[in-house]
Image 1 (tube, rainbow, N blue to C red):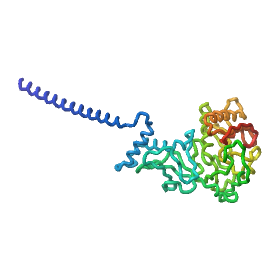
Image 2 (cartoon, helix red, strand yellow):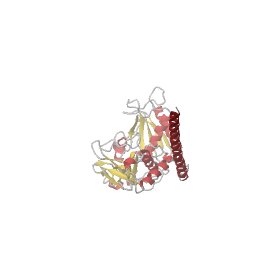
Image 3 (cartoon, one colour):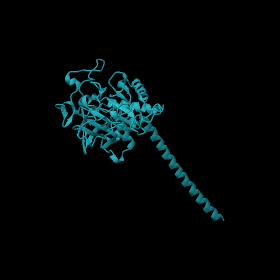
Image 4 (cartoon, rainbow, N blue to C red):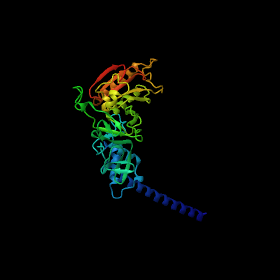
Length: 371
């Protein structure tokens, strides 16, 4: 019995020593981890640094190091945060723009970029530092050896206004702007508001479905003429699309379903504004010719006309006034987008609708046809 007791005591002593060694090792590791945390916390960015700035900065510092990881190793969230920050201003007040329009040939001026970061542009498999030629370009963020495409965002490089010769661009007939004839707009309009457009967006059958914002595509704003002529040419100002998205957001906040928004008339070439379709009620200096006006209605039930937005059981100009009230609220909150709003009754071939523009000063009216 004494030999068995001695053996048992020896085994228990050995087990105790093993537990003690393991415990000491764990304590040592925890102590080292605690000291490492304190040291790195002292070197961490200040508390006011936003998550996006921290993510972008971390990616940039890692990628510019000689031992930078490959693109496949990078954190998706960090790269996406850097892209979003770079394009924050370009997405507009609504945050829903999906295009920037450029006439300089130099591309987008980013809101901010991580150290060593640059925007790149691609089309047809070619990546360039600046867009080369008119058309739709994908936007990329290049940081070190990583390249991240900007999700749902494109750059549109325009043709210069001088590309129009004798009223045409290629086979597409555009016409002549009032300023080319020496006519000017209202005195209270901002300088240049009725001057020649800076350039034209080339719209092809292939790129016509490019999203310009959450709800709208390039084709939504094309002039309704020359159906078999491609490419077509479009004047479109991002501030108009931004305002339309803000109006839709406001309506949604007031319980209105806006997914069926329909552009009845967007850009109108001077030729079409004066002679095409139903010209009744059209202004000789219509903002439609300058790319910052559109006539819209909301048809979320798909019956081809304005929905009963005020829920009075009938379709009338009063439904257009519901949208006009949203325009008033947007103009109040965003004076940089202020403009006109005209409500219209139903006419031959269409129901009631509303004209919205960003002419630079407030204008309100009631019409019976045209726009």
